[in-house]
Length: 611
Image (cartoon, rainbow, N blue to C red):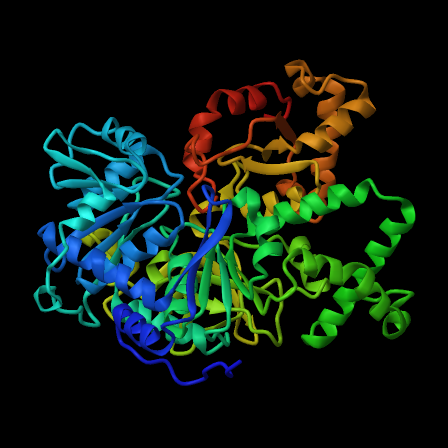
């Protein structure tokens, strides 16, 4: 096997990355996905992918697309999705990726706000749902269906199957295709998830994206022998830049997971070396493991706890962190090899056994979960950034890694603290602005290029960034006390009974928690209380409410007394994107929560003597 390349990164635009990689590695695997019809994984090489991209380029040209036109895509991660994206970029078009799990109404809004002329999606059913969510689509001309045949017009929009659409470009010579984009050409409108209000289209250029890819390469060694497992949507800038464009720049392969529900089996099958993930995925794997461990015998539980304890001390020593005292710490050198073989190696094997980095971003990773996986020897690297910064601002390094921080700012990125400890950044990855939102752009971008992140941070740890919370998400009670809800919610979720938590109390005398219970743990708890887990009455049973509140308060014991919830609601229906409560990156839309649960919250406060 040839040694992996270590040459410097070449190219100033995304299409230049593709051209260089296809020329260097035409026979190497580029992308792999599962074919359910064949019940097998199928893949394409870089040479084959290049031919597909050129075919899509010709089809865009045959459809009359001009440089700067917007073209939208609503697909799950697949080979067609990356082909669409790279072909559009090479034709100097502006891709507009829609959130695959977003509501039809939001997708319709983005189509119209961006002025997209083409939509590529999976099926007529998906298009019909979007079509029914808006009165009209003034700019939209064509809808291309990947999995359905069609050839008709609906309200002036031509709907057709992908093969017929691609065939229209047959015979167009390469010299007739549009010129390649310049570094300052737009490379995408990435719509923010929108925890408040309508989503905004973030305008990113090739210069922004390429700069961020270069910055990423300074802290993560990536080459053509690496394999990414991809499951975060391409509407998520994290996946687009850190996975797709970074892999593209060095020739690393990308394998599309079958679904989030298949992640654990795909990890074992694919054995990836790199993966981008949101914390919730790691938290679910951790909770599932802890539930399974709770059913083991006392000896196995004891060994697992010791392995986590000793493994964490090893991690602290290796990364310059304070080592927690323990009566058995002096045994670490003797027992760690055996503990690692019995516990740690099995956890790593469940992740495929080959990871060089698991990049966790999109939200803060629960500290308990981060500690556990770090103790097990998994290379968890926290990533911090925003859509507006292409997205990466900082990444935890492999050395001096501290799970309570998100690492040091990437090279050429400047950071400082503004009013109220707001983190401000300046660098080549900062967006051009918001599409048709000059006033919004001016609010977050200063004339000299500093971007307001909206996050409170601490830079006192040798320059490493520690995120304290969103400025706008701070709860101020009627007594004037301030509480960061995200930190409190994470603390409560450390109790395995609670899968999801939402806390509120703005302008109220105390904090309340809405808790979604884990089905398995809920059944076990109901069995102990001799209550029916399926009965709605159990959710409001006084004895059960007292017990659950006690567990909430125990989990929040390290918070000031005013920050510990004094009342709770027990829920079994999870918070979802489909219900409008979460963004596609699983962040809570707090105003939506307060609206959706208005009556419940009002009844909680009305019935509490301290309200």
